[in-house]
Amino acid sequence: MDRPCCPLALLPLLPLLLCLASLRAGSAASITTGTPDGSERWGYVEVRPKAHLFWWYYKSPQRTSSPAKPWPTVLWLQGGPGASGVGLGNFLEVGPLDVNLKPRNSTWLQKADLIFVDNPVGVGYSYVEDDTLLVTTDWQQAADATTLLKALVKEVPTLQSSPLFLVAESYGGKYAATLGASVARAVRAGELKVNLAGVALGDSWISPEDFTLSYTPLLLSVSRLDDNAGDEANKKAENVKRQITGGQFADAQRSWTDLLDIIGTRSGNVDMYNFLLDSGMDPVSADTPTVSSPSNVQALRYATYLGSQDSDSNTIDSIMNGVIKEKLRIVPKDLKWVEVSQAVYNTLVNDFMKPRIDEIDELLSYGINVTVYNGQLDVICSTNGAEAWVQKLKWDGLKSFLSLPRQSLYCGQSKGTKAFVRSYKNLHFYWILGAGHFVPADQPCIALSMIGSITQSPAS
Ligand SMILES: *[C@@H]1O[C@H](CO)[C@@H](O)[C@H](O)[C@H]1NC(C)=O
Ligand SMILES: *[C@@H]1O[C@H](CO)[C@@H](O)[C@H](O)[C@H]1NC(C)=O
Image 1 (cartoon, helix red, strand yellow):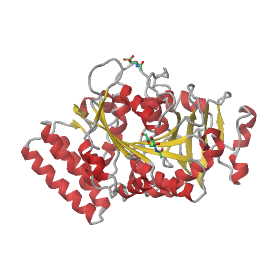
Image 2: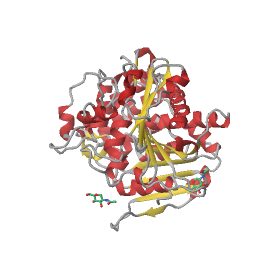
Image 3: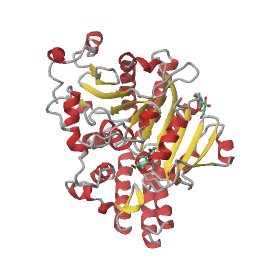
Image 4: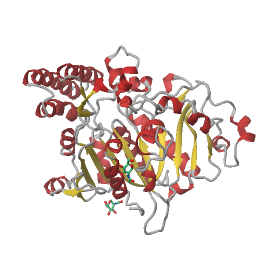
């Protein structure tokens, strides 16, 4: 992939805001631009030679700030691995505009400034000039994203004083865990000036073993599997567990994929992101080109679940390769945006099944607020699985946390319970009712009020 054509040549076309970070960093490929009023900024940071991360910052129109109540910033980390946060999280979940470029009334921008990043390199608008530069571990991702933040504190003036929250979905939870630890260490070493105020893990893949072992009991209890299928699935799940314990992580991923195939066949194709749905019923996935390797199927389904079923609606692919790319101006012409990068998914094969519980313990030990939130109807990162890994924390507050009652939460005009929350010291757990894997898309009202509470937004 070519770098954006000689940034200097763009200068006369862009507003004064454009600055070349390259002049400072000594490389030619970091670039920042934005809207003339400063409400949006975006750019590329060359985090390693020939490896470029794309980011997009939105300043909240509701922004107020006082020393006692500082305005927060949310950095959204999409999953996959390989899925685009700039596209999916932004236009399908929490950003200011939906896929039809109409205002989203539940946007998290009402509570916080938002930064979306196509993370790691190779995802969405981010790119590498050589595929050997793709990350192979969560920790390499964390190193690149830490480099990005070191550049962003210069490009986004509010970032140094604004409480920063890493908010993740799905595989993004492993990014948030490692990036959180990496940022906390850099801050303590005096290498990075941000206020890392919290990490929030939405339906996050923190412990692949615990999620894998949860599938059968969950699907048995909601009638999507019978006992015979359950026995078959359990054998496969035990196999995954043995391989993880034995450090055979790539083999474990293959067995996990086999397990998903067994579940699909024996459950009438349950949607792994919401057990009330069938995955085959989504009209968007019917249009998805057939892919040969089974691991591809899960990665691709990730995004199609969020796709609109409305036939006169825009598709995310069409806006990201059309009007949005034109607006941003700096995305290389020959770069084709895709929902999920298969190359990025594949290069993480040896890390995919590794747990990141230790990193969560590290964050808790620093006193950083950690929030786990989980949709009740999710299977792939089930609530039971999340509860199981939380119980493995070594954090000294765990026993007290587990003994506390939950509080019921309500939202808007409706009378029904929307969620439960339990908090002790710096650990918080939200049970979100009626949501599958994609909590802000499924339950926008409670998700918005939750993000206000997590970030202690002055707008709450
Ligand atoms: C947002 O719009 C939806 C559908 O139009 C509506 O049901 C909901 O109440 C609105 N939410 C807010 C916070 O205005
Ligand atoms: C953690 O969150 C709670 C409220 O949820 C807040 O009172 C506390 O100050 C936060 N701690 C830190 C270190 O930000």
